[in-house]
Amino acid sequence: MATVISLKRRMKAAQNVSKTTKAMQMISASKLKKAQYAALSTRPYVQELDLMTKNIINAIDKISFNHPYLKSRKTTGKTLLIILAPDKGLCGGLVSNLLREQIAYHKKNPDNSFYIPIGKKIEGYVARLSKDVIATFRFGVTNPTFDVIAPIMKIIDEYYLGGKVDGVKVLFTDFRSFFSQIPTIATLLPIELPVEVAKGKQSCFYVFEPEASEILPDLLRHHVEMTFYHFFLESFVSEQAGRMIAMQNATTNANDIIEDLRLEYNKTRQAKITSELLDITGAAIAAA
Amino acid sequence: MHLDVITPDKKVLSEEIDGLSVNTPNGHIGILPNHVHLVTKVIPGEMIIKIKGKERYYAITGGFLEVNENKVTILADYAVQSEQIEVEKALEAKKRAEEILKKTKEKVSDRDFALAQAELRRAVMELRVANRRRRVRSLPPQG
Image (cartoon, rainbow over all chains, first blue to last red; front, side, top):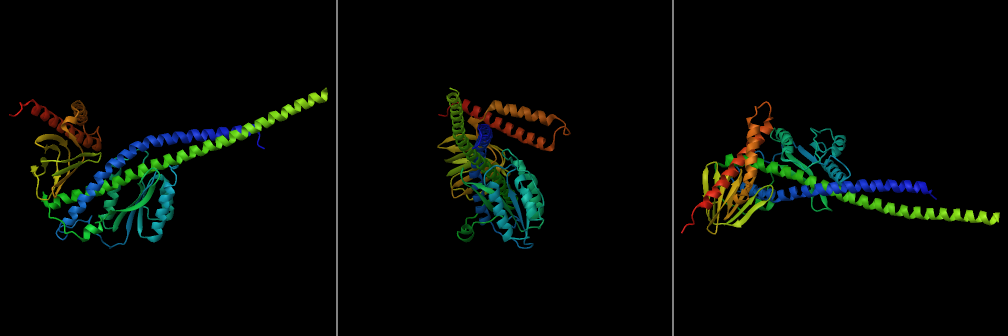
């Protein structure tokens, strides 16, 4: 049976863990609120932008207007995959889920992808998996601002418009709810038309003011940037939600352990007192 | 005619309207019900919408506008109704931005300079829209 002192030490350790995880949980909870607001309020904008862009793409004459963002091509057979992961761990299964998805992707498309891992937690793994890592970035620990995409967009332009890759995909974590964050691979470029719109409904005619060739490049660029930025926001809110839940579980577990240890500690203490009393009375009887 | 004004922060407006007017690169345009399908850019300035004979004023920054089957969608970076413009805040922002712009370029990074420029433009526009609202109010009621 463990001694009283060692039990006490273990209780102390569990209490410390519980305190730390509780604090981390509270930090994530407050960050989560902000992140959730940012991600959820951007959602309708991005959806509407997506709808608008696709409506318009569908309506224009694709022969007279040919933008590289719209052209699907198969010249190099290569893809650029950008992976959004947190800089910090302790957020439940988030990173390993992302990694599983990435490995599955890598197996399906061996040796025809370039990678840009973003976030400390994943860059090492990706580098071990493939040689074609062209750049790495930090994800950051605060709510991502719109500036973060600028340097990455530069690389995307260099590879996509420069004809080194056929498409650009993003692996990010989609925030469904507090308990469900799903790693998702989405296509950033070329801009994909939804099938039902692409097939049916010869949609309406639009007047462009000024010329379509002046508006559309701006609109498409804006579409790509906003979509990409929105992936950042979704990933960040997923990270915070994942961490909050993980830390909540950790706190509960630590408290369970503390309770068990306390029970054992009390029993041991009681037993020790009893045996000491027995010793004393035994000695008194013997002396009498 | 239905109007949606959406910014990355929130849905500013989603209402049935009688008409609206905004600034575009080609000039000021007005949109009334049954307008032809249109795609255009919105440039920073004042947006006036008419609901049941009453006019409402908004300060709006750049964005895109689409008219489709009597449904108008405006995606803007920022939009605020004249009543909600905080004049004090706008004045302060204007002053702050002007101070940054006054410094020589070596002291300010290009990025800060551009940010200050954008802030100044927005503040000036907000003030203009807010002032206009006051003028309108002081007019005697039309009989």
